[in-house]
Length: 296
Image (cartoon, rainbow, N blue to C red; front, side, top):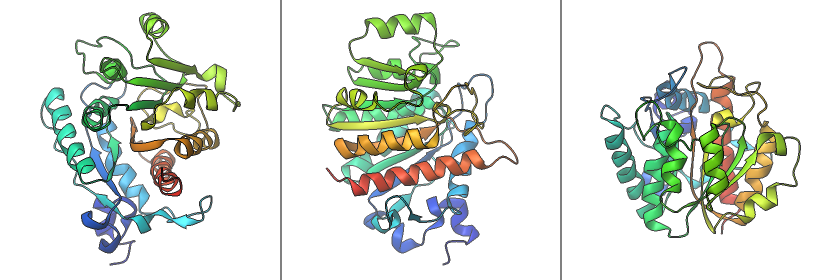
């Protein structure tokens, strides 16, 4: 069936045919998680996975930077996860699905949904990789002990991950509480690169990479980008990163580390404004390409 078919647009990342999206032949497995229970200011991230998948069907499969079509490695798309349960149960379900993916020696690519879902992914990967570290591109530190009455809020996800003893590198941060700033100063496993110190610069990249272990998970909150590039997010912050700075940094990370999975979260689609949806779809595909080009 042609990749422009509406059948694939509704269910399959990139709208690729069965021979390139079958589970058995796929290097990557896309998990859409439309979870949106703790978002603040503006909800709607539950619509993010579908918007990304629908937009992805219209992006070119040939990558002009990498000079290849990453779909040749196979990209399987799972059905959207059922999230009609409480946050802890959702995280447990994510952990189970990701465990199945990594046990099959495939790379999980998760599309959110709110940022809290990343903890479920990390739980599964941490069980497989003792030296796992996390690279977080984000506007917000997400290091609160609790937020709005729950420790499972999107604003707490990196605090929960840090409690596992996992090393965290944050880049693009430009919004955090006083308590979070204090926690960063005292924590030995968190390395933060504030947006004001890195925008329009490249000299910080190698230092940031030096704090990552051999096995790395990448989590990208789309508000890491400046709102000029990604306005469709629940809590946009001025002063963010741009496309070429993000991809240049990610390319270097993929060259030097083994990336065991990645996600994009917090897209909050806006009617009539699809540029953000396309950016996220293209970014995920770009990262798949980097992974294939730099096999470690």
